Image (tube, rainbow, N blue to C red):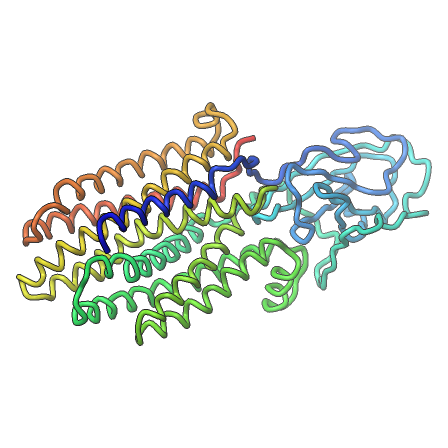
Amino acid sequence: MTPRFIRSKRIGLVAAALAVLLTPALLFAHAKLLRSSPAANATLATPPTHLNLWFSERPEVAFSKITLADSAGTAVSLGALYATDSMGVAAPIIGTLAPGKYKLAWRTAAADGHPTNGSFSFTISKQRADSAAAQPPPPAGAQVQITHSTRSANSLVNPDGKITMSSAMRWVELVAVLTLVGIVTFRLAVLPAARWKAAALSDVDDRLRRLANAMFILFIVSTLTRAFTQADLLPFEGSRAATMLALVKNTAWGRGWAIGAAGGIVLLGGLALARRGTAGWITAAVALIAVGLGQTLTGHSAASSHTALAVAADLAHLLAAGGWLGGLAALVVAGLPAVKAMAPKAGSDHGSRLLTAFHGTAVECVTLIVVTALISAWLRLGGFDALWTSRYGITLLLKTAVVILALVLGWYHSKRVVPAAWTGDVAASFRRSAAAELILGMIVLAITAVLVTTPLPR
């Protein structure tokens, strides 16, 4: 490819990304309770017949649960939970409510799967009628929750228990996915641009496949663990297979996860076919788009009312980050050892061309990362002051600082390593700085794992 064609290709990639991403979108958030009926701390003369809750984001009925208990802690029988409108859920009260104080506890999650919970009290001062005497049916078209529960329908929600996603497991999954994206990017974009000969390609192919197989196992273990944890939020028990089926069937989170899992199955086939040639790597690339889509559909973007735009932005960010950090991992673990195994003259030639090719791809990825990061920060923070007044904003500032350090190392590579001849001293210097850049990248992913499980500022 000519330099002019390469430059045009890079400009086209950036322009296409901007065309998709530079569109107004709404703020993302976890589901928060906005109002209720009965209202918190209300005093009622007549017992209510239903409990109604409305949230800041559309609640997933399958992830939602409401319990009611009297002042002695005895559970009051409730009917099946159902959706009243796009932002509300309700449950009919089956049991009798005597005068006294009652505590309502709730738990829910929006489409992003991030759970929130809470509780409040209300008081009945005088009972005028038996609430069980005439229960109106759910509204027409209401989405009634269907369960196969062996657990008591009124087992109490513990509002004081802290319900969080595992940031550590999310970090492991991100490391695996981004490394896999980087491996495929390295094989399909970097190596062809480096113009390696067939014998050298065969060696690095073997190394890339071994690394990809290890990362695939890590991805499968982490994504299944995360799905099992999410399934535990469903308010019923059953076999593990039945619970997972209910997760996929009844929740948007589960359907998003299933897309990623399907991509993982295709990815396995692509990695197996990669032994025979480029077609397997192309199959793996397509599969990783589905895997990345599954990641975004189970994160903050899934709770946006502009889901398609939000998912496109997050998917572009994830793939670009994989091309940079995952590509660097592929370079260090597979590319450089293949260069070291060559004769000195051939190694110098192949090493120089490999570093130049990787640098070009990394610049494209970093450009897209910066653009999507700025757009996401604008969408999610809601105001500039949220950077230092919210937990999410402070964590984002920390991530930005570490990213800048990693980019400084990348700038060092572009000035001191890429233009230089690939000699023993240059190779040793690059290995040290590249290892430092990878460590910073792992820290960035750890902070990202915290960010994706942190409520966003309102």
